[in-house]
Amino acid sequence: MVVVNGAQLIVRALKNQNVKVIFTLCGDDDLIYNYCEDAGIRLIDFRHEQATGHAAQGWFIATGEVGVCLVQSGPGVTDLAPSITVAYQECIPVVALATHPPLMSVEKCTVNEFDAAKMYSSFTKWSGFCYETARLPEYINMCFRIAAGGRPGPVLLNIPVDVMVKECDDRLECVQNCFQPMEKNRTLIRPHGDPEAIRKALKLLLNAKRPIIMLGSGAGFANAGEEARKFVELTKIPVGAWGWGQGLIPDDHPLCFGLASIMEGPGQVMLPVADVALVVGLRYTDLFGYGQPPFFAPDVKIIQVDICAEEIGRNRPVEIGIVGDAKAVLSQFYQQAKEILKEPRPETDWVEKMRVEKQKFEERIAKDGSSDDIPIKPQRLAKEIREFMPRDGIIILDGGDTTVWGLMYLRAYYPKHLYFSGGLYIQHLGGGVPMAIAAKAANPEKKVLVYTGDGSFLFNGKEIDTARRHDLPFVTVIHNDCQWGMVARIQRLAHGPKFYGLGSKLSSKTRYDKYAEAFDCYGELVTDPKEIKPALKRAFDSGVPAIVDVRIDPDVETILDYLWAGAYNPATYERTVPEKPPEAITPVR
Image 1 (tube, helix red, strand yellow):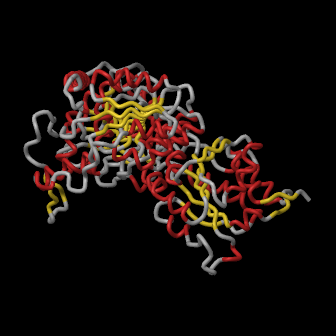
Image 2 (cartoon, rainbow, N blue to C red):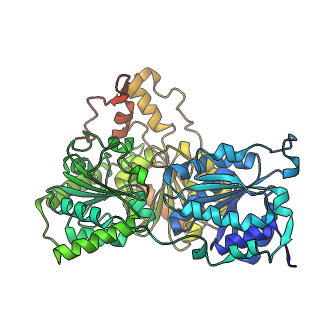
Image 3 (cartoon, helix red, strand yellow):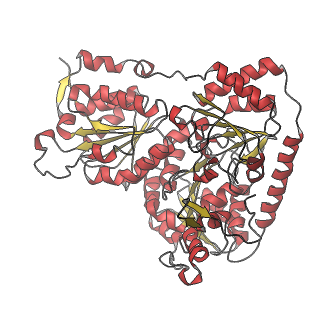
């Protein structure tokens, strides 16, 4: 008999799933640590459990591999919850492991005892317990199968401490069966779409006068860039992206119009007049006006592709719904189009209109971003970051205003190189620094930059200590307007000047550069726009985690301020958008 304990089985099962790194915070989970080094699994230990979940998300985005985080029972698993909520809403596969008090002490009011599985049930694909040591590898395999299968998402496995320390016979058949090659424990085959539905959809697209393609996070997670590019170049249909679909088609591609959204950009002009839209791996949320006018034409014909059948037709009726993996379905679209067209179609006036709108937008934001005003305009900061970062640099947006300005100015030239730290469908702040740690661990040769707000930074800003200890240098740029900017301006727009800054002001005396120095990192304060690029260079050249604290004009408004400051109509539950946004802001057409 070969005797092994539960912790050994957990590590072997993780290794069998090709896990390379575990993001963790120590406690009664530390027995598992003892076996990670021999297994070749790296441990990156954090200062708060929420950050471990964000880092696990960042690992998936950077590598395409399921992220793993490990926390202790009780406060460890409750602290983890916010980041797992984001993973669920954003369909990011994360395997979260948490210890639990021993089974022998259940219902004795022991320390840290509560039903974590029940708590997590509403924001995971699965949450539960393993009660038998010999079945731990089976449960680990199940967690990966559920997290990565279908529409991806997080799972939580609770492991009682006595199950973890108990020993069993390693040669048991139920144990050995779990250590087969990974592909024998979960399918890696991509589900294809119905060929007849694709044929009908292709006919609709090719006969359209103003067709568009919208690539969402589902397309990004499926790594569908090559298939999307070949189809776009063959059919000459303008393409836009959102979320982790950005970068599948480089933003400077001649057929890419940038953001496929109602935010500022060519998409504001293209989406409302398109007559056919191929929507791949994207959900029509409020960020898209739920797919309704005035953001989309009332008679636009929607072709929706999603791996999850229940997403088809959500919020907006579809002309054709196709259930399947984005990469597989786009490959089918390309192959069928190639048989019909034989060679690339000529470009239409619709493509030229897209390019004209794109050029107008780029000229306008370049002008807006050239201001030498002090305090620094947010447009100038975003423009300086865009010009400084290399084409293959990774930028993580964290915050309200920073995400808006970042999406407007920054560009994605490679898949998953422009991150959202919190979420596209759930507003969550503070994920930027832990996600940067994961991104740097996965891409040590690349420049990684977090573009965050002074409000969002301090949620997990202390994790620069984690980055310093693990020698993972990146630069955090703080867009510091000394307030919760988006909230403060909406207060003024929605309720009047009297209420501006009520509960939303932050201190102008806080020095985040000094905060960095306290953690043995590099810090610099910037108040002159001409010093932004030199400061960025010094920060990256320092070779340690760095913070550049940039003081920003607090009163520059965005189009989202106006969209979100509108009053709800209690009869229709819709917002009324204020009629006269300032001239500097392009109103939604």
